Length: 425
Ligand SMILES: *Cc1c(COP(=O)(O)O)cnc(C)c1O
Image (cartoon, rainbow, N blue to C red; front, side, top):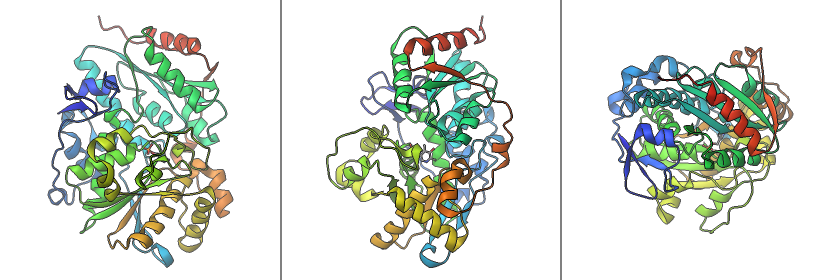
């Protein structure tokens, strides 16, 4: 299977698309054609089996051990009582770093390894993170042969649990705290890619098509477990998760409507309403992984579906921090369920959507992070402190370098790590 850019027609091999990240014309890679998926034919399959069926079109399946990549599956929790009946939660936080970012990173890592080996090359992944992406990428790529990882995070601006996860000592991974904001980290990564000083740099953020493909699998998983089409609520920031939902729907997964659940960073919500919003800087909220001013995957959504057609398929809601906390509290009081703030934004949007749309289809809310990753916020909203899962308590050794927000410091580290890559001669 090959990919094309959203801005051109030339096809490239999947391996090149994931190594390059961004297309040379500045566009984002998308699959050259959608591949039909037959839900009925997969009834009874395990999550790993479903992943194998969907992803074997992209990577020779015998090269990957899907059972170990996706052993944690994607549990479905059905809510009931008061205003919650009809809402199902798809828990995407049981992977090794407890956010849905694990699904993408755990496929992209080995896929990069396979692409590098076929080209007799080595590679260095440079990634900026505001929290969940960095640890998922570090965990998934630490032992991929021929690959090293440098991750930049803003010093003192991630949650305590996130910092522990980001700085956990892992072979082949260098965690770097930057004296600055997430925007500084992103700018430094962009600048590093713009210099010719280091060859073979690869990105691992959600512009990489290799992260979106495996995220289709849990949409199919949810649909396989219902005997009618489903509506899906996606807590959204950069719109990567929603783009993966579009891929699933285009290959035949029976999805009625999508709901894009945003926090106060509501650029896409206003776009869907028919405004022509200008991109502004992000504002800080309780659901910090969704604090995105200008969502980069919008270009993919628009490539597939424009104007009114997009608004007919996706309903957008913007949820305030107050409403997010209200939902966390009432959900816990009425059902006993603890949601993290990102999932709570989704749940608030789900309730509004069910009231306003009158849809009678089951509503799936994607639960994007484990509540224990945001312990303080969850405890403040509900009075209950979520139990720490074993993967979080298992980290005992941490390590990171602290640098100023300067390109030269980043390039020094990148060069050092580059020198540690194995020679292929
Ligand atoms: C990254 C992230 C999101 C936003 O996902 P996008 O693909 O950027 O829209 C939502 N919730 C959590 C917990 C995340 O880490």
